[in-house]
Length: 51
View 1 (cartoon, rainbow, N blue to C red):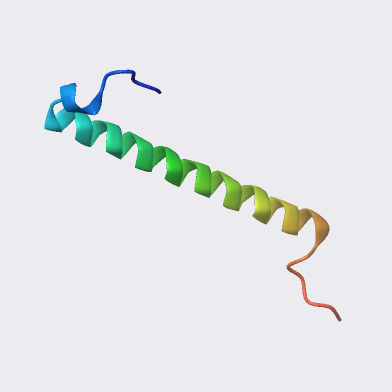
View 2 (view 1 turned 135 degrees about the vertical axis):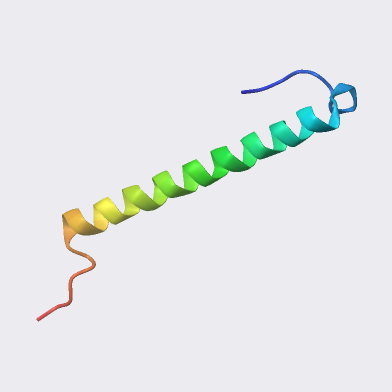
């Protein structure tokens, strides 16, 4: 969520919360991307050895 308040007007606690939210969203996006890539590999069999 975007907050239009300038960082200098936030309390240290509010700045920490915003930083934590940004990091958490980044981790969620990374995990989602990894899950999608894993599903593609399973669907196309790219992770199976060639016999």
